[in-house]
Every structure is written in C-alpha cells, then in structure tokens.
Length: 307
Image (cartoon, rainbow, N blue to C red; front, side, top):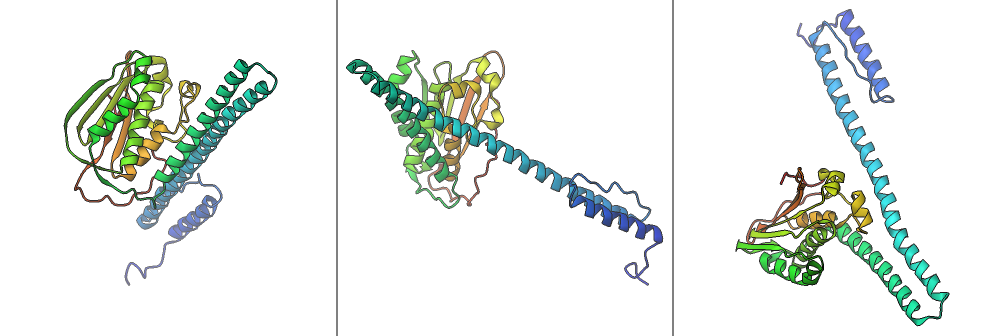
C-alpha cells in the first residue's frame, strides 16, 4: 500500500474537517486563520500553506481598500480644484456687472481670465496625465539634445527666476543624445522647473550629465515637514502649502508618467535636516538603446531617494 492509498487517521480527518470549516469562514471573514496544530505532517503543512494564502489575500484586500480610500480623497481634491476657479470667475463676473467704472471692470475681467487660466492648466495636466498613463500610448522617440531642451526651458523662465531674485546654478557636463519624444521631454523639464518655482525657497541647481538631468532646490523646513516623499509623484498629491499655492498636484505625476512612457525614470526625494532639499533626477535612455518592454503605469510612486 502506498502513502497515497493509506487511509487517513481519525485525527487527520478531524483536522481536515476543521480546515474545511475554516475556509468556509474565510470566504466571509478574510481575517480568519487556520493556526492548526496537527500530528499529521501533511495536514500541518496544508494548514500552513492555507495561512500563507489567507495572509496574502488579506494584504491584497487591505491594499485595495487603501487605494480606494486614496482615490476618493483624490476625487475630493480634484472637485475642490475645479470648483474654486469657477466660483472665483463667477464672482468676478458678478462684480463686473454691478459697476460702470471702466477701471474696475477691467480689473474684474483680469480676475476672470486668471481663474480661467487656472482651469485650463488643470485640464491640460489632466489630459497630459491621462495620455501618459495610457498603456496603449507609444510616444514617437528620437535622439534629443537634453542640454538644449533644458536651456530653452530655463530661458523661458528667465523673468520668473529674476522676479524672485534667484539665479539658477546651471551645470552642463558632457552630454550624449537622449532617446525621447521632444514634446514630452519639454513637458517633463517644464514641470520640474515649475515645481521649483512654485514650491522652492531658493534658486535651484540644474545639472545635465550624459542623458540625465538633476534639479535640486531648497525648500522651507516647515514645507518639507508636511511632505510625504513616497507620495510626491502620486497624482493629485499636495501638501498644505502646495494647495495654498494653487497647484494641481499633477505636475510631478505627469513628469514621472511621461518619463516612464519614454522608457526613462524620474526619482524624487526630500532630504532631512535644517536645510532640506528637494531633488528630482530624470534619467533617459541613450539614443540607440533597445526599446523598453511595455509597462503598466499604476499608482505605485517612483522610488524616493535621499539627497
């Protein structure tokens, strides 16, 4: 008689019955566990395997619940960001209708334009993120001069940096052609520089070397303390100071999604200490590198690193 043909001992049968009952309970109570001690090694091993599977199922269930809760928070934030400029524009229009003073009418209409511009920025960011996060979207890649694109982006913000009294520390080391979609690459760099302007407390360091770009800028300690580095590239993530600045919370999420769609990566982080620094490092593939395998862009944020 083989081991397979050997009849089960009464105790083993009782243990298997207990396991069967446990699985029935687990169907409606995911936290149920076997925790069964059996004299039969096979039954004990089966119980441990069931526990491992139940633990894994519970972790997946908790992750789904956390994702659902975060998604609801993001929708609430998006609703707020949409309503605020619309309400502001409506308010300025009402004020404009109540006065015949040309100067006041002009100021109120300027207010309307500012609120509508904020709405356009939000919808542009939403469209850019939706496109970049679409697994079916394949950007047309070609060799690009990373240093030239960075120089153009900095030149476009010359006045903005000057208004703050900032002079960026620009370092262009030896570079090589990077494989990128020109429009997408420009958008990534624009978003990184806009992030530095909106949330930095001093002039940024902008360093290009090879096919990589690093943007590093100081941030106020109080602002840094409110940030969760692991969520910086998460869509709609904003610290309190970020929301007060009028940002959409999509800039870094768009930058990361576009970087990954081009086969590159974007790593961000915030250093600790009395003089915290925000750092973003964009790495692109060199021209001539093989195409990356298609990847699904989920909500897992890019890995943060210490600066």
